[in-house]
Image (cartoon, rainbow, N blue to C red):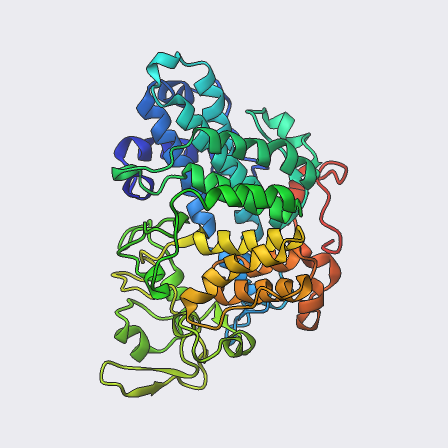
Length: 486
């Protein structure tokens, strides 16, 4: 959406004021005294709060440029075939350490978004309701952003400091890690319940792309599924099925970025091509092969940092309509004349086409990151129902996704174990390279079993707390490192 991607001038000024005050690399959690002129000046009108909400998305958008490292590369369906000396390859080989800049930027991006939301929520409470016509919507949207940030934080780091209000620097230094289960129950779930009750079902104009009530419900369903509360997950996801979402007929159309807001769209992290707000995925996932980048109209070279493994490639049957756009054609591509162009042997032999789109500048494409879409909801619902001993009722939701892919549907006579395996496999085929596989492995308890031969040890279901943060606090009673990373 335009006003979440291309900042209006007043929003830009606000963000710059924030970043000037928050840019110190040694900050534990981004803090700004609540008495500063900047905060008091801007939080006055309805537009001020709208601009502040827009500003809260900026660190999330920055963070999601690297989210594939956590959600995809860490797991078995993606790998870094060529490069072996960057954060992507370290995550792939389970050698990522607490001192990497990726860990610190991830921590700070999420807490910067949380800080901005906390400030907004505090300020809106003291403003006359009559001067903020959209007050309830802003509270709901801010709550969604905070829940979203904390959900990613606990899935990546485990227990983290729970900050829900403005605090002083001294208080920040004294705030310990909070149990992830407590953050789920006291922050994430309550915030999403607020969000689903007050967000709109649809938006128009420049507001298209903001989180909706459906996005809040779908994310809450994912949260319940992660917590293994299958009853609540089923109930919440079932609500989403009655909200006028539906699968698009053509799977390939999901990755036509000229039409981002289709019937299957629920919530994306959105980018705009040719600007500083563009996404890096088109270049990051493309083989370093000039003939290929030229053919697809991609500016700059390919980084080949997120490529399908042969195991995932072979999981697709030849009649699966998702295969070519999901995992490309092994070893090359066909040009406009139908001529086969083999990829050089010193280049990644596999690639996904989900993020291929013409881009005017390197790392500046309009390829969005799909946080949640309707096919994911259907598969999560099938999983929840199956775990609730409703296997026969679950399979039609699984088959709805299969039917679109043009592959054989599953019989409703499958038992619970067979259905569980089928749903897991379908999530891999349908949702690969959308940042879900690693977190699926962790929440189902299969991560170590699947990844132990790739270098994983049992403690690596979470990532290391940034070394800079641990050293800054210098008190293991308050901010200890995750076990195994010392």
